Amino acid sequence: MTTTLESRARRATSRSGKRRETFGEARRPGWATYVTLMTVAAVGAFPFYWTIVVGSWTNDVIYSDELTLTVGPNLIDSIRRVLTADINLVAATLNSLVVSTTTALAVVLFSTLAGFSFAKLRFRGSNALLVAVIATMAVPAQIGVVPLFLVMNHLNLRGSLLAVILPGLVTAFGVFWMTQFLRGALPDELIDAARIDGASLIKTFWHVALPAARPAAAMLFLFTFVGSWTNFFWPYIILDSKSATLPVALQGLQSQYYTDYPLILTGALLSTVPLLVLFVFAGRQLVAGIMAGAVKG
Image (cartoon, rainbow, N blue to C red):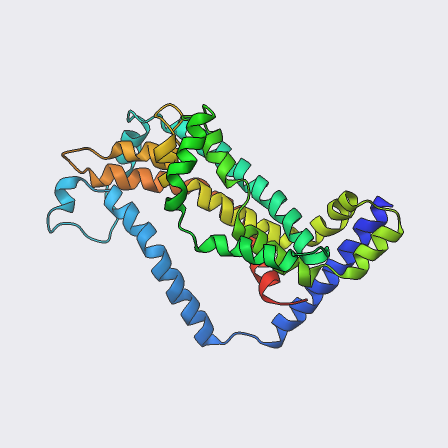
């Protein structure tokens, strides 16, 4: 029965993908589109390149008129200085990896569960509850910092990675995104067929809804991972130097009386390397997830 449900879900997803491919083939981009995309890519990549340039020179060159757009000779030395700085870069990277991966997986799971419930289950007050969830996106995170800090302090989680992971286990955006995707990507006939075959609600979710939501789930995982990796505000408040994540640890490169721009920007450059690796290996899934949410099957 499990194999039958999964095969039906894969066939429905493949049919939806074929329709999206047909839509994409109907309109081939022209030269103006490629020129625009190359311009946007160049503008977006310039800050990254400028970070490399600044990190490859000394402060004396940066404050003088000798600074150019070419990469200088001191990039390796700047990297060595960051790696040997008193910020425990390896431990901070591992902490960020644990927090980001755990948070992203939890958001995908719980958001898909909630999205499946809102999209395909009929219960009283579902629309009002979904609106209430979406409305929380309009509330700034800074408003809840004080009560959240008091709760974490009461639970003796101050300085623990759990204090960063627990508040981010599910997001309103994730619930909204998965709800909208499953409404169009998951046919009601598949759910009815699963119930006829005797599948429970959990099995229907696991073997039918979750495979159908894979493109949107991949996009949500990547966005959540990046957001958690670059999060500074709450970890800076609740964590100490021993459990600091990477953005908090890099703040230690900032001196009180002296700004070493090559050191700071090289640290920022190194912090983006894991994200670049992630996008290289998962970029296709990201594009597929965005296109799946933009084009109705």
